[in-house]
Length: 394
Ligand SMILES: [Ca+2]
Ligand SMILES: [Ca+2]
Ligand SMILES: [Ca+2]
Image 1 (tube, rainbow, N blue to C red):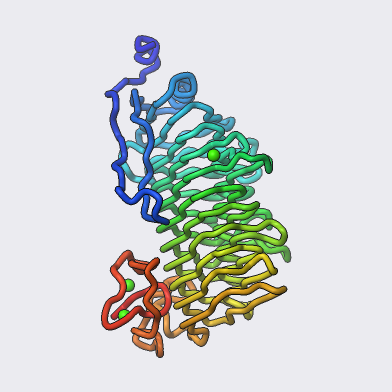
Image 2: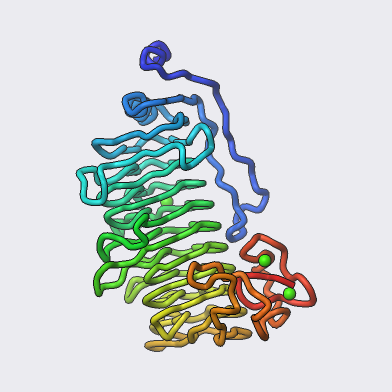
């Protein structure tokens, strides 16, 4: 096989490389690092034909990492990844310099990566210009442990990262999405059936330190949330994300399609048409220390339907209301809903760091054992007590 690889211009670099370290905190919400089996081989590619050959090799062989040299890789069909432990990484580490793309949001390429395999990973690149999803993880094939780091998702015809289900007993477990960007280059999407991360039947997924921009519908129907987990997902952790100019922010559950326990903490959420954080039939979800700036809608946080119960909504800072709808219940404490745009560094772009105009916020929060950091990953508390909202300043 090695001679074939060399004839394709692909070099086997090494064995057993790139193993991520163990966090030592496995199982604690949101603190885990991605772990995966050792790679047996690493392939370097520099053009589309080498990439396609490398994908074929990786699908036929387990534990392969593919490094992409700087450049644009133009697809004329999706990359189907059913191999085990197949990783893609921009070699330079610069997500701008490595692009895998389709033929646009109305073009003939539906996905960049369509993934039924376990331990799929993509890092350090831009992916998009695609008619459906930049990535689809097949929970229906029990695809577990996917990993995304330093990836720009851009201009997709539907949801940018989709985790699909067939409503069987299969769950997609333990996905991590970190340091990624999800954005429409025009500041608005092509239709309403779009979203950032859209997860069905996911278990113990973490979305952290990501940026979402312009996930907005051009018509009267709303776009899906920037981050949405439903269809009985559970154990989701959403933290330290910045959402800017999106129709809806973070949603756990929707209508009869619920969500189990989870945590939403230290996010900055700027929405332009609807709720910043919405819980719908979401049981035992805690909403801690988020900052929300909500335009053209009265409620910043809604907890909705009788299946929403047992959670805590504490230390949040918002300009809109925090309300129960349709029989939802939660424990509320130490929230401030009188924020003004001047309290934030740049409310209209979702920079919800506090200014000196903020009032009744610094050191006014409760101590929460599940919140040890702020939006900036700085330690809480600073000063005498927790600040309210995502940003700890004093
Ligand atoms: Ca699973
Ligand atoms: Ca403080
Ligand atoms: Ca801070």
